[in-house]
Image (cartoon, rainbow, N blue to C red; front, side, top):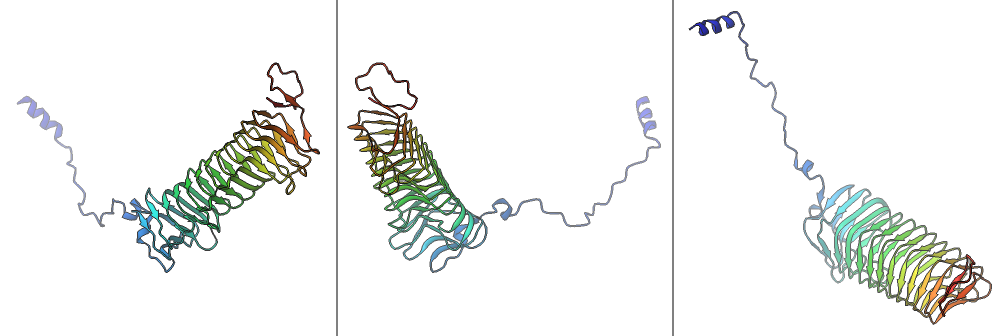
Length: 356
């Protein structure tokens, strides 16, 4: 009883709180995201086509496949007529048919186009045609049985990066890029020519097998670095002022070939080729530096033709070739030290080449 009186006294004189209005004054704002906010990309299948393509991407943006796409005769599968486009194949396949055109083609002159993450197969022309695009990107793409003479399986544009992709069984070039291109971490197998790049391009860290004609070609002013090539008429074909470094080439007609000037062929491993390194006098074949290469088990290790002059040949090692060195007059050559009988190396010349 005393406790009740005390509690009552404590609350005497304390005003009671009065609640505010329960009227919100305005409708509540939405709290859920819209569908376009959840998936801002556009499904390709929702896009209309034309007489030349099943679907046309005509505006900048991000697009994706939701299912496999089958080609039809007389059309390309996807035509892009805009710059600033990302096309995600989302792991699906675009499959061509007889009489069809390109798998994905950009028409007109555009820039900033990216294609990624899927498979294209059986396209009579190019699987991916980015011929007139500047700053294009292809990644995570597998291409099989696409292309014909004059139509590479992947036709890249200018300053185009093609990476982490594979191209098989093309009757033309597997991967072609115009000037300023980069091809890296790719595989090209059983194509007429594996990878072809115009000037100021780089081809690196890629595998090229069983090309009918050439494995890797750069026309001028480029870098061919750390690739593995097996088979083909010519493993690597280098134009003017191309650096060819740290590659492995085996079982080709010619491992590394150049008939241009000013290139550097350095630190390559060449095995079981008919000719390891060939500097030809057919065109210019001048001012080429051949150094620190290992050439084994072939026909001719290093061949520099008559007419190819002012080339520089130093610090190479050639073993068990039919002819280890065949260098015409008019070239600068470090002394060739014959070690076929084995034993201790007596030469102290820092520019010496070795035959053993």
